[in-house]
Amino acid sequence: MNYKKGTQTRGCMKSVMRYVSQLSKTLWEGQQLISGIGCQPETAFDEFLSTKLLHRKDGGVMFYHMVQSFPKGADVDPRTAHEAARRLAGYFEGCEVLVCTHVDREHIHSHCIINSVNFETGKKVHMADAQIQALRVCNDQICEELGMPKFQRDEQRQSRGMSNAEYYTALKGESWKFELMRVIDDCMRYAGNREEFLALLRAEG
Image (tube, rainbow, N blue to C red; front, side, top):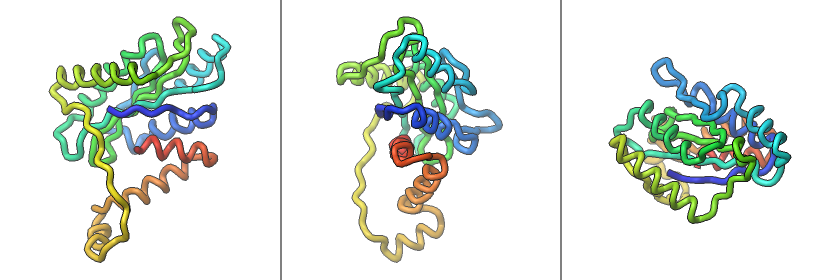
């Protein structure tokens, strides 16, 4: 489980929601793995914004972006992964959360977009180190209950030039560098400006 803070504009929040909700990323065996906690997925942006305007808190941190990711090659059923993300979203009681599970990569992962304003109390959500640690403990408990792998940090990879062998591997669609190029192109199509582009790249880790 990884956690990322969203940037601060309405446009960026809308772009991230549109990006993580793509049919090509969330469709699994005829079912789109998208849920709304306290909101409808189709109108999540409008509902997030209405809550902010109702409580006069349309500024500062607009949303939080949490990614629950499982190891590459792990035997993870996408529907179970989606249920794990829905349960984890319950940590943010009283907040609207858009939950989208992506099945288009070698590792199954879910995105949770959390409204920074609690629609029940009107209070702003604050995520300090203590809350993030509690969230990770909650994630581990949920994964254990569902028989899924627990949180692991992605290994950092150093970027180097492409060797001949790596180039031929890339031609078969197996290179991480070509995957990165694909992600960048995808993000550019959905971003309206530099800020949104960077936010979408963060969404892909």
